[in-house]
Amino acid sequence: MKTIYLDNNATTNIAPEVLDEMLPYLSEFYGNPSSMHIFGGRLHRKVEEARAKVANLIGALPEEIIFTSCGTESDNTAIMSAVESFPHKRHIITTRVEHPAVLNFCKHLSRKGYRVTFLSVDSLGRLNMDEFMNAITDDTAVVSIMYANNETGVIFPINEISAVSGERGVLFHTDAVQTAGKIPIDVRKLPVDMLSLSGHKLHAPKGVGALYVRKGTRFYPYIIGGHQERSRRAGTENVASIVGLGKACELAGENLYEEVTYLKNLRDRLEDGLLKTCPDARVNGDREHRLPNTTNMSFEYVEGEAILLRLDEYGICASSGSACTSGSLEPSHVLRAMGVPFTAIHGSIRFSLSRYNTEEEINRVLELLPGIIKELRQLSPFGRQKTG
Ligand code: PLP
Image (cartoon, rainbow, N blue to C red; front, side, top):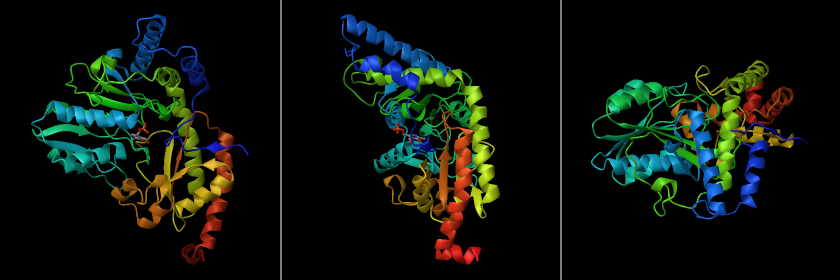
């Protein structure tokens, strides 16, 4: 049975071109990029080449890119750097719908005595801008707001928020882990100070990420030790994965505009098809300002986990926003923050596509899922009542 992988916001496959580029750096070129001998020079050049490719994807300068071990490290580093750089400032602004990489780090800082404002969102997952304008003060060390949400795909007005932060002299960080490689980002036009990205969300391997830090921004390293990454992130470089990340960024940049259209058409075909064929289905989140590859849908009167298990029998991979996913016992904090009714949260499924998905795969889901949902509703006492 062929797998139909529609869980690309969780992680992506490594692109074949990326793997090819990486393999020599896992075998014959095993040296340390800091060494003086032949290995060192070659590896150092290769790391710098990758840095330029990552920079190019977001319109940055190569020296503005710091390689990290993952998106989480990039997020933690950015926030920690801001609070260390402005020790007299004790306030942080973020949102209630961030990934745990930001949310839990901010909760950790709040336990350390920082005041943290968690901005709310409306029923479409849109940020409350008035709340943001009222929250920002001279005591704010950093505003950290995600570019696009991993569960719903909703895109925040980063341009506007970062401009306000800049005018107020407050550092602005955005978690663009789900955004980089999915829609164009250009930091020459976007006044962000720091931006996180992660390899495994854009067809590079897991365990490598990058943090963009605008030239001139005060920076304080989070991982302290050797002089790698111009003393901004210690630790011998993960050369093969860095090379992979560079190649993945190059590939993403080459086909970005075509892929946006391709993915949007595919996603809309899936979404519209399911809305038409499944009664009591809804889309969670602002359908207009959304990543092209993501849809978060709720099917009332049925459990998300039950849908996932049935889809899995056909080799179809997606994820759910209800309880017990990803090792969490709590229903999605994002959908709760949006005020999605409990019954809809429990029946929520996220489909996230990539350039490797095809129309045939989407047709297969459209062929199977309405029947699965009908069947599950008939099995559930609540569903039986509803569907008569
Ligand atoms: N931020 C967002 C929005 C994410 O979706 C993820 C991963 O799901 C992360 C951060 C963490 O990235 P990593 O898995 O590379 O640590």
